[in-house]
Image (cartoon, rainbow, N blue to C red; front, side):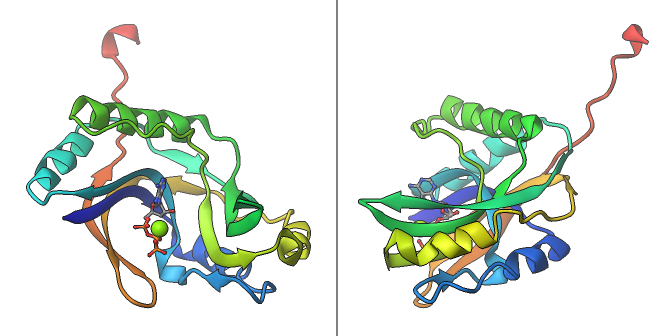
Length: 187
Ligand code: ATP
Ligand code: MG
């Protein structure tokens, strides 16, 4: 089996900005800065022969490059415990469109749909037993976070390998976002 997900890697300058957020919560296990990414679609475990099919399907996605701005922070809770801390993204229609195109091409190729609503974020840290109180100051203190915009020119299919200390992500296929040709007859 091979564990897969589709994501947008974060450029170096923005990774540095994100790294500056990774402190101030003692109970958090912060993400390695090389691992920062924005997940577009978690695929999960598939049989290895399925990989070519998934990869080829993703290569069919046509979408335009677009500008994205990382902004704000937040957290996810379950059972009243903070599980993760993350940085957010300014509302970005082309990002939603890209995510929908990926979802649609994968479901047309037989992957079960991911029923969850897409909520774009970059995970900065995880917590095992996070009381919401531990993170209140962090959330308030970093609410004004904003990084310089960058242009998203591709997205990537990654393998996720669970090493003992942290996950190792290996890019398997980088799919370019290409400006769509203007129909000359319209001009
Ligand atoms: P680890 O699980 O070893 O702590 P990780 O969560 O970064 O590391 P994966 O579990 O392989 O590695 O997840 C890869 C990406 O997919 C991450 O961005 C993760 O948040 C996201 N992800 C994982 N599971 C799901 C899920 N069930 N639904 C949506 N996204 C998920
Ligand atoms: Mg995980």
